[in-house]
Image 1: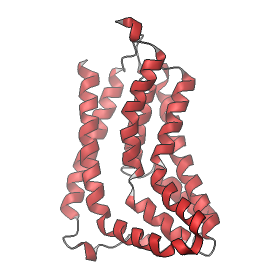
Image 2 (image 1 turned 180 degrees about the vertical axis):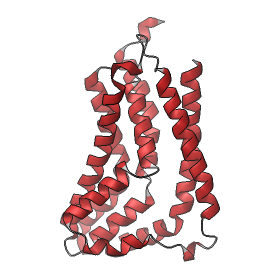
Image 3 (image 1 turned 90 degrees about the vertical axis):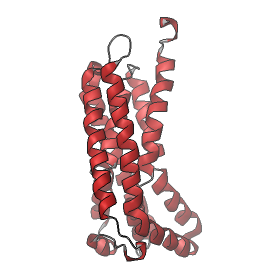
Image 4 (image 1 turned 120 degrees about the vertical axis):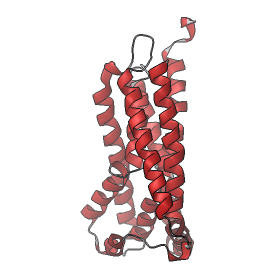
Length: 235
């Protein structure tokens, strides 16, 4: 039924494929904790906006690079992804699943004993430039976010939709993937100092459960990417 194989239908399919990946990126406890620490600095409003900008730039740049690499070679005339897209998803899926097992084994048995990385203690002394670079690293260089962003961009590139729609799909991915950070930032910008106690509670909860949350997300989306990769290679 080639009648239904139109760009609009493909666009709907690709959005359905990447929205779940975007939601997984949005659930990122460690970057959220880092942002809350940034908001507690003397110039919290400015630094928070700088952090959010770095995050968005990191995801956008990584996705754009993947779109450029994929190009028109990611799909055939019927919109079926190229084999390399399936292989990429298989590799990313295996990596995420293995890392999930490693994280789960190393999770603290007592969440009250969970500790944040030592580098977080220095965030309140970071300049805006360092905060921007930190956000770039936590988005484009994160062991969870980078593979998921690459997989989402590969799906977009493999969809066969026009370039303009690919860019729109990537923009939607970035917006959804940024909601986890934009929520505490929005609360702080609206409520100001009144939000400090609330954000402090969010920070404590995220710090305690960071490892377990990441392990579960790594495993679930690792399996999803494995399934997607097998589907591409066998269909």
